Length: 330
Ligand SMILES: Nc1ncnc2c1ncn2[C@@H]1O[C@H](COP(=O)(O)OP(=O)(O)OP(=O)(O)O)[C@@H](O)[C@H]1O
Ligand SMILES: [Mg+2]
Image 1 (cartoon, rainbow, N blue to C red):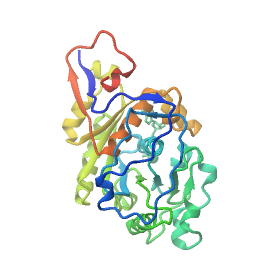
Image 2: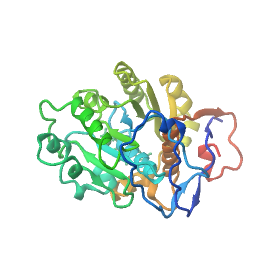
Image 3: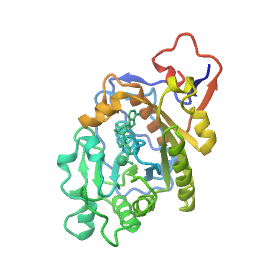
Image 4: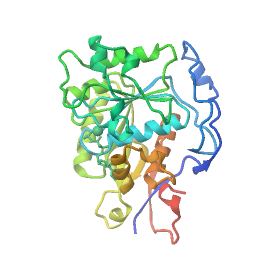
C-alpha cells in the first residue's frame, strides 16, 4: 500500500516555554546587508512553538517572497497568514502585503480587519503616510500587515509593479530598520494583479493542491515567474489527504513534485481546523495544542528561513503504529 512519507530534514518540533534568544548574526547576514539602525525586537516571547535550535536566516534581507498559485482558492492567503506569523514567532520581522486587489481577505484571516484604515493606494495618492497604512499585530509586534486597496475597489490606473518596488525600497529605509521578510499574497490568475504582485519579489512560494487543474495552472505560473527572473521557486502542496492517496484517488506529493519539478517547501494536510481558524480570524499556527496543519506551516516557515527544502518519498508498506508526528516523517 502506498503511503506518503516526507523525509525529515529538520529535527522534530517541541514546545518550550522559553523566550526566543536574540538573533545571532551570521556571516551571511552581516556581509551584504548594511542595516541603517538596529531593529527593536520583542525582548521576551512567552510560549512559542519552536525547534531545539533557532533557524539561521539565509540570504539578504529583506527577503521578498511572493505567495502565488495561478488557480484560485488553493490556500495562498492561508499560507501567507500562517507562514508569516510563524516567521514572526521565530523572531523575524515580517511585513505581509495583501496584493489581492478588490478581493482582499488576509486581514480577515489575521483578525485585523477592523484596524485597516489606510491602504497602499492612499499612501501612493499622498493621503497618508506609509506607517499609517501598516497595521501592527498586537499578538506579535514584529508582524505587520499592509493592504494594497480597499475591498471591492479596482486597481487604479498607473498603479502597478513599480508601486510595490517603491514599497519595498521604502520599507528597507524605515528608521526602525528593514524587515527580514516581505510576504506578498498574490491574487489568483495571471493578469495585471499577478504581474504587480510578482514584480518586486526575488523568491516565490507556489501553493498547489494535488489536483490536475491546480497543477496545470501552477506549471504555467512557474514559467511566468522564471520569465520574470525569479529563480528561487519552492512549492507547498496543500490539502493533502493520505487516505485518498492510499486509495489512489489523489495524486501523491511525489507525483506532484515530479510533474512540477520544484523544490518542496512543505506539505499541508487537509485539516478542518484551517476553516475554523479562518472564520475566527485566529491563524492556525497560534492554536494550542498545535494541529497537524499548524505544525506543517511551522515547518515550511523554518525551511523558508534557511532556504531549505524537503523530500517526499513513497514507502512500500504502512508502518503498523503511526504516531502524531508520522505525517511529517517523524
Ligand atoms: N489545509 C487546508 N485544509 C482545509 N481547508 C483549507 C486548507 N487550506 C485552505 N483551506 C480553505 O480553503 C479556502 C481557500 O483558502 P485561501 O483563501 O487561503 O485560498 P487562496 O488561494 O488565497 O484563494 P484566492 O485565490 O481566492 O485568493 C479557505 O476556506 C480555507 O479555509
Ligand atoms: Mg487569497
